[in-house]
Length: 558
Picture 1 (spheres, rainbow, N blue to C red):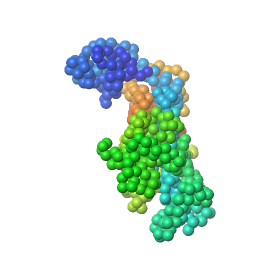
Picture 2: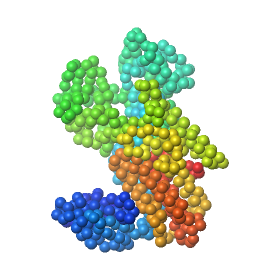
Picture 3: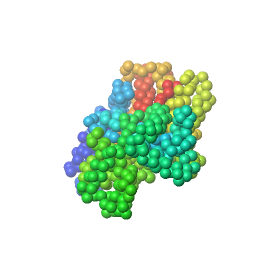
Picture 4: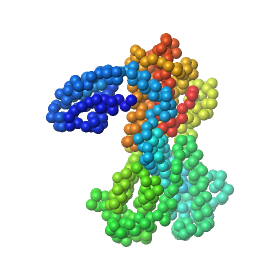
């Protein structure tokens, strides 16, 4: 049951709509304030009463029943207490009957969401700066699917630009096919770095010519480029597999080469394209932004040109409900410009474009910057976390079976969770010790809680029937948290914020562990044992669902 809907449906106040009441109902910060609360301050102007009186009137007109056991007006709030036995039976039945689908919904039925994320550059290894876009985008992909949307994951490859001419030139001068094939993307990157440090003007000219040959369809140049692309995708797909990330499209910048001209023509036809110092721009000064550069003075296209073409292609192809761009906050201006240009072009769907901005990631020693030579490869971070997880597991449980598999799930999960637990816009300082802690707000803590619950279930089983009576405060807290999972998922989708799910999982794990330590489960008597086993099974299922949405595996034992 959606208790907010139930409460809102029973509250009546002239001039205040159901939607206004429903949206205002929230979960109080403390248990002694009830399970749900309605602040009445926003209704004072419409009802011409002070909030305290409004709360008293609403509480007086709401008689407790089998669902809501208590109603109280306190300082302008109406606090509602849910019948704990009713809630427990309903929630546990829902979780145990729905299983892996618990928390899902159909609000996205018939709607498509495009998510542009990760967007790797051809011939460049993943560095730690790619972690957030990949983890956030991958989680949003799963969350939207869980909410019933048709989701299109797009890896907008960086596969266009003069750097590829430089790469071919470097390969022609210093490359060895066998060495590059064996070395993969790192061998390619070394060639590119060498070009930038050793190339003279003659080689720079050669590089420009090679890029021209790529654009003009030259067979040899494009075969080399496609080989570099294949090596890159082989490399990144290995990382994506570890991170439980998938894509439906790898259409990159190059794909839109022949799709830019119609956009340029439309800008001209609508009088939006202007010349400025030989370049072609869209003037955005009236909207508080610098001009959006469409064509350089030499006629070359830019990121904006290709992004406009990509937006039009995605709308034409997928007819999206929303199109998300999971890109760092440094690109805020770029996306504001793109969305404004689309709006000026008369695209009604421009309002459905969303820049999901996130903060930067660095290690504790500050390492991240490629320009300063401090680049840290993402694969190294993952491998180090897995290695450290293996050592911790060896110390804590040397007889554990499948230690390598458990270390993989724990280490990879720690990397993902480290990128998702905080609000996405915050900068992250990545600490190996913190993300791998068995205590605190980490995925390891949640995974260990799952293993603890699984151990209890293995010993006691899941009862086919149970009664919910004499609910203890510890049991009630777990039940209430279980009931909030669906809203946590929906809030994550609404706010483009996977941290809602990550924080929910930690909160549930904390409440379950308090129940685990304070209440007997396997040695409880009669119906209480069955109820507590059902509560344990429901917790395990819900935590598993939450971690799965984040792309994190759940070991059976730890």
